[in-house]
Image 1: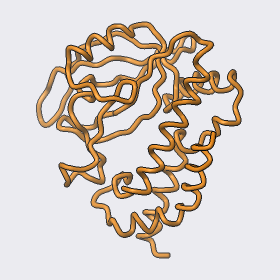
Image 2 (image 1 turned 180 degrees about the vertical axis):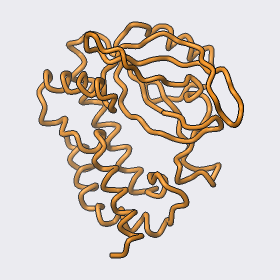
Image 3 (image 1 turned 90 degrees about the horizontal axis):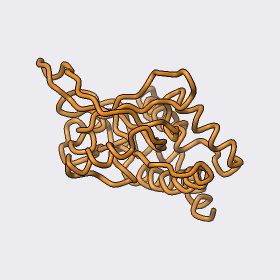
Length: 224
């Protein structure tokens, strides 16, 4: 194997170590699922439970200028921890792209989503986010892409109801989102690399090395 191929192989290996792909949620008790999700919030990881903060306007440098942007904050639910994740509201409306597809405007667009769906209206988005203030939410996946105004963190948010429902929500979302992402990885591996440009043939070759493992995982998840 040459160094160029190893670069692609290592990217796939790194991707499959993300929480969405690697966390053995099916072996966990309800209490373990919830405590792990709370702990990941402290580490700001995906499949983390947060408390929704307020919406704020901030001036941020981008594209050689300074622009006013709307943000909302996600706070870990540990007592005394104030470090938060700030998400641009525009990440729900305007596309960011995987770095590997910066040269292709028709491919690999990233958006933040709410309950796994895109929001097309700022009015709807303001209402949804406003209604979640101070409530618990599950951030299921987190990706980074480049938009018109620099780096965007694109997430999926799921509101959480009563605490006795949290574990089942986590299991259900893990199953659904992991299957979806693994299937997409087999179909379009070239968009999951964080460098540019991507050699599609090397991307396919690297994924083929993990294909059996990925297909077994998909089949296992579909049979849960």
